[in-house]
Image (cartoon, rainbow, N blue to C red; front, side):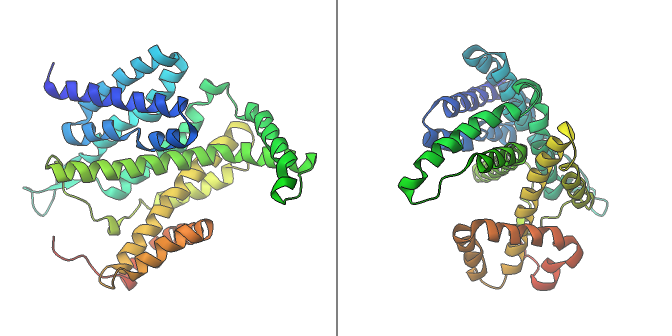
Length: 315
């Protein structure tokens, strides 16, 4: 067996153990482990190729099957195994440049992140058979959680919730859950893809040029797909689940586009603008996030990065 496959299997087993530990550990530590779960396998994929990463995905899925059973194994493979091989493969797709046949044109960053968001949007729909075909069974535990919270509300100086409010909150959370899961997965995977790329680039093993992150541009059809997803979220049954899921993932993708726009505008104008943006995200999280998402959605039409930004300097 080639040495790279051993590295791939090791990375896959490390990701699987992180995934298992995140699911069974303390909530705070589990959240931290879950955020870093894709990193070992993505390091393998970007540093040694998609085939070793795929070998690691199979090894990790087999380990999860032994530790937690077939449904957990299938969930691991869909959520982490398959994408850690797929996206390094896309990242290294290239073709000759028409003007310079000796140079390579790599898969654009915007299309790569669009693919990540589409996968994230599809994931809560694909895993439906593993959770009984619906998110409705989660309504009862959510209602029980709000009843416990309502009983303790006076101790916190808050007004208790009545049964109608509890039912409304539970219904809202169940309907919004696919979108939240899709956005969360997209955020985790995009972050780990960036971290893995930085680490592999520092090691000298990155076999492609580093993309200009401030020049991020999605395919034009992605905004139309986002509008279709929002419309589908008002539909019945699985259509609503799919629409909500893709809406969450795609809106997070446009939040990234909004951050990229701020970096493009700040280029050559000083870092003070970025400090304002990131401090604003910490203090006014949802409102600043919404503003950045809207900016990302409007950027293809308004071309603010061209009007307000400055071109990158020579690398």
